[in-house]
Length: 412
Image (cartoon, rainbow, N blue to C red; front, side, top):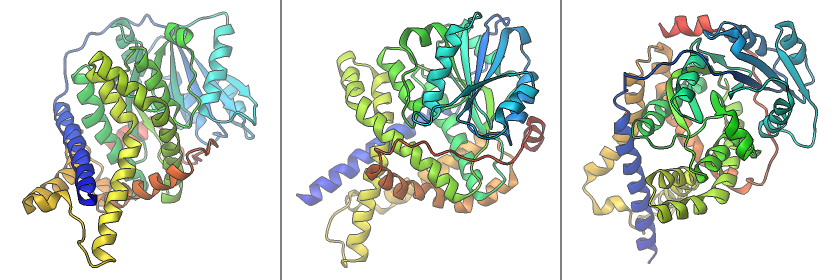
């Protein structure tokens, strides 16, 4: 009976893996033709910031130089519970510093909810709201791309999240590889197939009328995923704009990375509990492949946890108890199948880098440590499961100033 349960679970995980691999094949191509519109949409650009005096100035300089009419966008920096000079730096760039002090409701989701309420009170109303983090840099054509999608009928848009410091350490390189994979072989395939994309926390654009209609209401540790599910449950599907690039700073050390990813996984468990079964039921009731795909994404954190537990159980049986006493799925299959599965998991990340024409030499050297980053998700997710009720926001400190010219020169 135990063998049957374990093999059954492995088969389910294998089917999910094949499902995702098949989807990734639709990211091998990128549609070249797209409709362009003159700049007509107005934007409120929101920047969430908590003690970001080291990096916010570079973003302010960057946002002044966007290839978009300056009378069609305003920048509002949410100085959320700041105790440093973030607000002063923002004002020195003639941008709007919106100071929020609330020690009880801390975190990006609460800060955004507060800012939107303030925004609706202002005399000027905007067609859309764009959200960045303080450590970001936006491609000069970012707002042009958002304008194109809004004019084409999109209501929620996710830009291409790139990494601005992939060569700083093996950890930032691992983030870079992961995000290139997500953009090219996860987000782009779903865009090509007209499926729903998911929000990534920054580089997001929302139609103002939509935000007023359904409210923000996303205050978990992963407000981006939560809002994705809120939209999808109402039949509003986020779209992905491959050409709307922004560059995000990644943590330098493994400790900082683990702390950040722990917060993500804790929040992901919350969203999975709240949205998986309702979304799955709607997908069955409506016969919607889009909602099924989103339900699967919502429950992904449990898939990672189950993979870890099964692997640990099988490893313990073979290494500590002189096994095998239990069967695995691969014991019923030819040996080459397991080798093919391992090779496929490794190659898919390299394939994403090749497709994205990544030229960072250090990143290719750091690939030898990439498995450490991948496997570290297992204990992080395991710990997150037991601490998922922790709602405390953990801030990722940013200290290195990088400007867009440096990023673009390194990209070649």
